[in-house]
Structure formats: structure tokens, C-alpha cells
Amino acid sequence: MMKRHNLIFYSVLLALMLFFAIYTATKFPYTYITMEGDDFWVLTKDFWHLKLAMLPAFTNWLADFLMQFYRSPFIAATIQASILGTICLLAHAILMKLSGNRRGLCWLALLPPALLGFYCTFSLSFQLQWLFFFALLLIYQIISNLRGKLFWSVLCVPIGFLLMMMPLLILLIVCQAFVAFKSFGAKKCAYWLLPTIILGITPLAYSQQVAFIPFQVRYTYIGCKAEPITGKINRDGEYLKKLVCMANEERWEDLLYKEHVRSQARQGWGVSLQYALLAESALGTLPENLLDYPIRDENQFLYQHKTDRIALQLNRLFYLNLGIYDEAFHHAEEYGLLQTSGNCFSSLRQMIDYSIEEGDWEIADKYLDILSKSSCHKTFIKERRAKMEAAKKSFNKDIQLRADNFVGGYPLPIEMLRLARYYKDSPNRKKMVDYAICSYILRGDANSFRIATQAFDIYKDKELPKAYREFLGQ
Image (cartoon, rainbow, N blue to C red; front, side, top):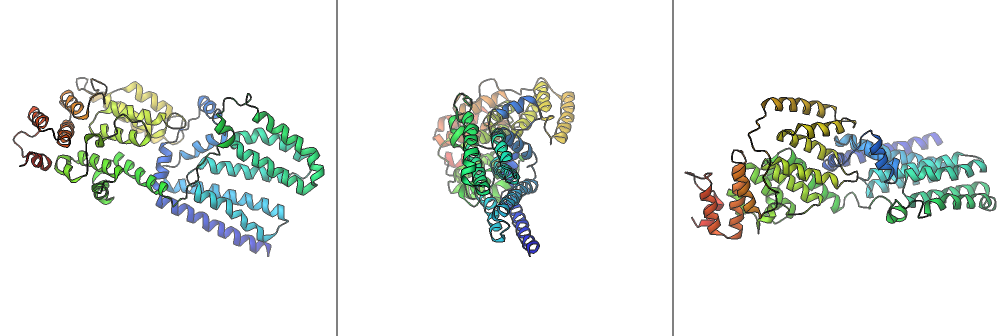
């Protein structure tokens, strides 16, 4: 009967793991892809020292290592489902040992992975902390004598300090005491274990011993914010990440029409509006369709002077669309600085590509060397080194590749006209002029509109686009 009962339990667990993997991989593929892009892991002493100062050190280091493989949503979902399944097996073993193999209690082991999978779906580090929590508790439970438990209750404190946040470590110590009380009796255990618990926690609680760890991380922060997998934050996050990935791949028509971004932008949806305008510019249709959108001023083309993640992503794509690689490089670098490790794979890959476009071989080579110390970039490095060697042979030093001023230092229409004059041979020059003229339309500045259209020959002997004609009342 016990074997049959275990078979049913393992079958249910396997079915739940498969459901979780398939559901998250199909519903949130771009979230997983972005997790890999925002990750950073290299096999160096400096990186380990950085992680050592960001508790829990080993868990964060391991989470970063695993997220290198998240470029495939199905591999990512399989990794997370395996972690949740392992948590369930560890919890099952603990419950069976505590209850004396009572079969009814074993189903409670499904609760921790279910809660973690539903409320902390994309927090790999937090899930790993719970895996180590149950693993350490099971080891403590397996130890049969009181002296062994006494030794382990002291040893698990520094070990747990590297594996989980302080609230979880305190919970582990409390659960270990409960297990000991159940096995040996309260009086006997209190005599041995309570002083041990006090001695184990005191060095960690003493502020001078852990002064380098911020207070909120030391005692209150558990490493994850609970959010249902079906919640609005996850849905909106997936939508935004999908737009960014499609823009990076220059799938502009798919972004506008297949993803219904154009129709949503016309209804005034903020992020949709900005990515729709970017896609119209990339396709060269912005002057035709500008007035189809509820845009009020030129500042809605991009985020002026903002440095949050959403703003940096859009601004990087904005300047990349114009072929201004040094400014795209700047926004990619700032985006990497906002990540936990102060850098990330997506930023490094982007900066390498932009450096090659600009002919900055030293910077490209430097970042390729950094990526060579990761686990999943051999093909990327090989391709970029070949591209760099080919670019060196055909590189024209006379072409202007860097702006002559700090981009963003002028109002948008003036900046676009300055850049259009500076990048006079750029294939993206028309886009710059169109952004300036569209800005004057939004301002209702007819005089500047006429000066801008006459100063550049992009519409000489051609019919003006729809938005320009309507502005002039033609």
C-alpha cells in the first residue's frame, strides 16, 4: 500500500511540474528571456567577492549561474520546475519522518512548491533559498543523537548565512528546535539547544559583525515580493518585455499589427504609444500616421532625462533606430548599471555590437573577454570576433560615427536638426529630420515647420506626407 501511495504522489508531482513548465514557458517566454538578459555571471574571483557581499552569497551566485541558460524559455521553465519538484520531495521526506510515515500528511508537501510557483514564479534565488531550507532541515532530522544535533545546530548557522536570508535562517533554527523537542523531550533539549541557538544567532545579530549588510536586508527582507502568476504585474511585464524583444529584433510590422500595438496606441496606452511611434519611425511611416495617435508633445517620442529601466530600454532603441550608436551604447551601459551585479549580459552584448559599428575595437575586445568567462557565449564571441575582423578591413575612418555634443542637451527638434546636419551621409538622416518636423507640428509652430522643411532636401520635388499636408491645411 505504501509503494502504491508513493507512486500516486510522485505521479501527481510530475504532472504538476509538467503543467508548471509548459504553462510558464508558453505564457511568459519573454519574461524568461529577459531574465537571462538581466543576469550576469562570470567565473572570476572578483565576481565571487561581489556576491559574497550580497547575502545570501552562494544562493545568488548559483541563481545567476542557472539564469545563463534562460535564453530558451523551455529550459528556463524546466529548471524552475525541477527546483520546485525537489522542494516538494524534501518536504515530503521531512513530513514522513516527522509523522512516522502517515500517508495523509505527505500531501502537505505539495503546498510549499505550489505557493512558491504561484506567488514567486520568477524569483529563482528565493526558490533556491527554500530548497536549501528544506535540505538543511532534513539533514538535521536525519541526525539521530542529541550531540550530533547540537553540533549541526551550530554549524548550520554560518552555512545557512550563505544560503538564505536572515528571516528564513531564524525559521530554520526554530524548526530544528521543534524537531529536537519532538525527538528528545522539551526539558532535555532546552538544556542543550537553547544556549546553542542563542550562541548561533548572537554573532549574526550583533550589528558590528555584519555592519556591511544593510539593516533591511539583514533582518526583514526575504528576497521576494509575492505576486500571483496571473496578476496584472506579471501580465503587463510580459507584454512590455515582448515589445522590447521584438524591437531588438526589428520586427516592426509584427509589433504594430500582429501584436495590435497600433490599435492599443490609438487608444492612448502609454507604453504601446511609444513603441508604436518608434515602429512607425523605423518603417518610415511616422510622417504619414503621426496624427492617427493621441500624442500631445514631442517628449512622448522618448523618455527625456530618465534613468529607470523602461526609459533606458526605449531610449536605447530610439537612438539605435537613428544609427547613433554611441548614445545607444550609453543607454545600454546605464541599463546594465541598474542590475544587481552592476552589469548584465544584454548590455554587454549590445555594447559589443555598437562598439563594432563605431570601430571601437578595444572596447569590443574588452567586453568579449568578459563574456568569455561566462558559460553560454562561445558562439556569440566567435561570430562577433569574425564580424570585427571583417569590419576592420572595410572600416572608413572619414565617416562620422559619434555625435558632436551631449545627446539630450537640446530640445528634441533642435537636437534632431543638429544631428541631421552632423550625420549628413547617414541613411537615417530622414528619420532625424522627420522627428524635428513632427515635433514642430505637435507644438503648432508653423514658422519653424517651414524653415525645417526648406532647410533639408528630403522632400524636394516630392509630395509631403499626410500629417505635413494636414498641418498646412492642404
